Every structure is written in C-alpha cells, then in structure tokens.
Length: 359
Ligand SMILES: Nc1ncnc2c1ncn2[C@@H]1O[C@H](COP(=O)(O)OP(=O)(O)OP(=O)(O)O)[C@@H](O)[C@H]1O
Ligand SMILES: [Mg+2]
Image (tube, rainbow, N blue to C red):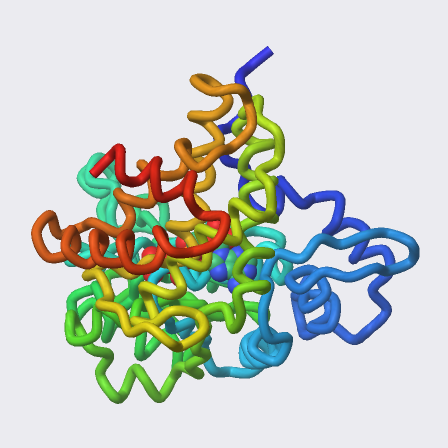
C-alpha cells in the first residue's frame, strides 16, 4: 500500500460532502459550475441538507462569503485581501474546489514569478524538434483554467512583478490569451475566473495597477470578531489537523485554547480584554493561523513527551516563539505582559510559571 498524501486537496478531503451537495442541489448553476452559488456557500459555511451534515470550513460573516461567490459568477475576478492568517488561501482553495471541483490550478506569486507562469512557456526540446507548435507549448495554470472553464488561483498577487501582473489584464478583460508565435489564441470557456489573494501587510511591495484593480472585486477577510469565534476556529482546525497528522493526544481543553487566543488578541489589540490595561504590541502578526500552529505543536509535545493531554508547559514554548519575533523589542513586550497580566490573572499561575521557566 502506498503512503497517503501528507495533505489532501480540498476536493479530495471533502469529496463526500461535495457529492452530497451535488445530489441535493436543485438551485440554478452558473455555466460550468459544479454547484449553485447557494450550495457553494453551504459548503464553505457548513449546514445540514437532506439529513447530511456539511462541516463549516470558514467561520465568520456569512455575507463576506456570499459576496465572494456572487463575484465569481460575474465577469469580474475576485481579490481576497486581509492581514496574514485570515484564511485567504484557505477560502480560495475551498471556493475553487466547490465551484470547479479542482483547486490545483494555482500560480504562486513571488518576486520571481515569470510571465510563463501566467501565460505559457515552451518545451525547448519540442520547440527545437518541431518549431513553435501547440505540442511545444507549455500552458500556465491560467491558460488551463481558461481552456477548461475552471477557477484559477493566484496566490500573493502583489508580490508578482508589475509587468507580469499586467499580463493578467488582457486575460481578465478580453477573456482571451493571444499566442502570437502561432497566430492563435485561447478563448476562455464559461466557468473560468480568477481568485487572487493578497496580504495587506505587504502593501507597497508591488501595488496593483489601477487597470488591474478595476478588473477585480475586492473582498476583505476580517480578523475573527470575538474570542468565542476565534476559539472555535482554532478548535476545529486543530481537531482536523490532529486527525490528519495522527497525533495521539486528547483533544485540547477548550480552556487552554481560550487562554492562548486571549493572549494573542490582547497583544494584537494593545490592551487587555477588559480594556483596563494598555499593552505594547509585538512586531509579529499573532494571527489565528499561528494560534493553530501553537496548539498543534503543544499537542505534539503532550503526545510524545507528556502524558497525552495539553498543559500550560506544552504551550509556553510555542507562545514565546510566536510573540518574540524580534529578540530585543518583543522580549520586552512579552516580559511586561507576563508580569502585569499573566501573573495577576486568576487561574493562570501554571501558565505564568511555565513561561517564566522558559524566559
Ligand atoms: N475565519 C476562519 N475560519 C476558518 N479557518 C480559519 C479562519 N481564519 C483562519 N483560519 C485558519 O487559519 C489557517 C491559515 O489560513 P490561510 O493560510 O488561508 O491564511 P492567509 O490569509 O492565506 O494567510 P497569509 O497572508 O499568511 O497567506 C487555515 O488553516 C485556516 O483554516
Ligand atoms: Mg495565504
């Protein structure tokens, strides 16, 4: 038997839910969509349908997801914007899985993303043997999305050099990709659209040109509204990651997750939850995604070097690592928080001691 993939694509992992949605979906579908917009929203936000349970992938405002889905049914592309760890990539993966049944048409944006990644390249052996021909052409994920009428994802759009970004303009406005070498073009099939993600902390890296901006509808993914919402996000993600990684630990106590989320939120906000004490914020983002990793790492420690249940000592190292990104300034911020907040809080003595031992 072959070893299973470390991480399954959304459409593989949730194949059963997607199949159930297809069975029960009687609402109108945009051309070449696997599901109606309503069913796509149910897939993302969770719910029950014909007695079958659909898990929530995104926890947060329903409207945000509805606007994102509605955009994809128009001729405008979707830009998911937000601070790090607000589930931009996660939502983009699940949207493509639900709409096109395929989340793998992906361009990863970096400072070195070449134009070939957005348009097409050439297989040089074929090019030399046969000259410019369709067989020698290597399509980009965007070109494949156009041909197949599927959603294509562009991750970290603002990191891509401006001239390469601009090659998206024709594609998004004409819905065609010219191939001058062959005197030919690829016309997008119905169902094609683009979901791009960008981080608003990276602002100014390669700001979108206004021509490109006009072709996108921007949807901002917010930070979780309340402690409860953020605790729920961390709990569900940790549960499913723990299962996938087969970490032999008990599910973490909700109280432990709540403490961690509280620390992250207070430091992010620069004030304690009751608003009474002002705090300095560390240089890092302390995102929900980091909270998920800290709990996960703690669980692994508890499983392999502890008694299998998550305790303060298993979390302390991860918290310190997440908060102290700059060894000088952040250390001061953390020490102050430890001594003024953690030490004084009812029921937090174990956490205080565990953190003190480390620093
Ligand atoms: N509101 C939310 N609902 C469900 N999961 C969430 C939510 N917010 C964050 N997460 C989880 O956080 C993790 C990180 O999300 P993701 O990588 O998509 O963030 P991102 O916004 O793309 O960050 P970056 O800017 O660093 O690329 C995912 O595992 C996701 O499940
Ligand atoms: Mg991302």
